[in-house]
Length: 189
Ligand code: GRF
Image (cartoon, rainbow, N blue to C red; front, top):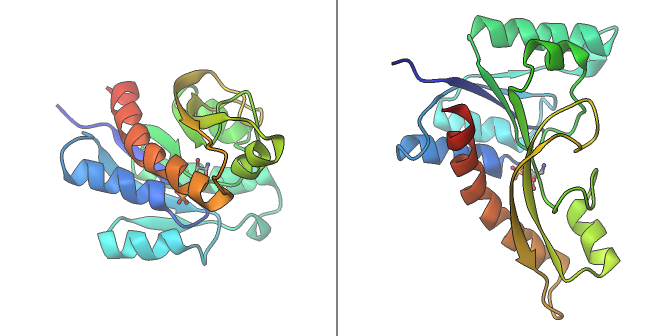
């Protein structure tokens, strides 16, 4: 049986991309990591993809007349690699109608809060500012909204009174690196 093909989309450091890569290497996640897509040609995740020999492609929105043109170029690349699933991992851009229609219910995202609390940018900072005692990680299907799609998995993290933002970020990332590969495995098989 052929393995499902995934593309990871990332804009930043790529620790979740790395966790997905390692889970595949260990045989815990059974799929083919066909391609990394980034919208940031200088993103750290590219170095990780090079080290791991993952094929990658960088697309800059400013090189295209419209976002639809940008997404059409990305889509062409995904099709050439026969990608079945899009896995967003720190991809800092809303997915538009071109990709949403082509990959209906086949795009998932990870977000560092218990959605619907603290959507959007700096969810960890937002939780800290709000003074909540529990936050966490959410994995969800992607729709046209900002972190609004149907929730697939969540895991809570307690914020202790002497915690700080960096510590919380480390706690959250540790959970993300475990929960995302496990959840991807459940969703794509
Ligand atoms: C993660 O915290 C993820 O939840 C959010 O962006 C961050 C990406 O981190 N969407 P990394 O680039 O995978 O290290």
